[in-house]
Length: 133
Image (cartoon, rainbow, N blue to C red; front, side, top):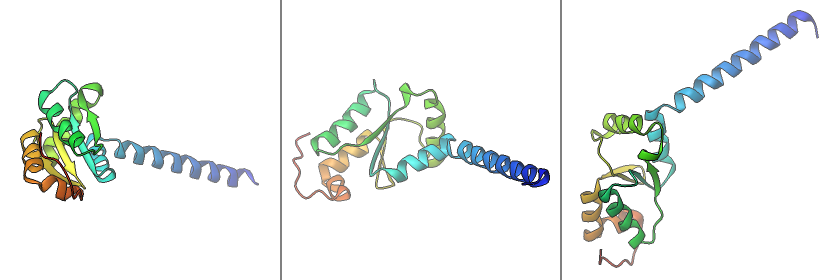
């Protein structure tokens, strides 16, 4: 391989590396993280581990024997940024925020209401459930 070919090859490799780093950085933005998380899991809860409303929302899924993907914002360095991204995406910064099959369900009260009405079981495709929460 000639010197010029090796240089061109090296430049091409660097360009690919820079492009992949740029793409990774873009995908790791809080906005991209929120969207990717919501689209990658059937049940997502953005939560804070100490929050009683978050605990109540998580308890609903335990009653339904469902395991949500939980993002504990207080345990992440970028938790505040993710809350800001939630504000931009859904208009709410508060927690919990619950998503079912890529769609925003709401907060704790919305989740409990959907559970008690049977709407949550319907959204999750659960036929038999006990609503004694």
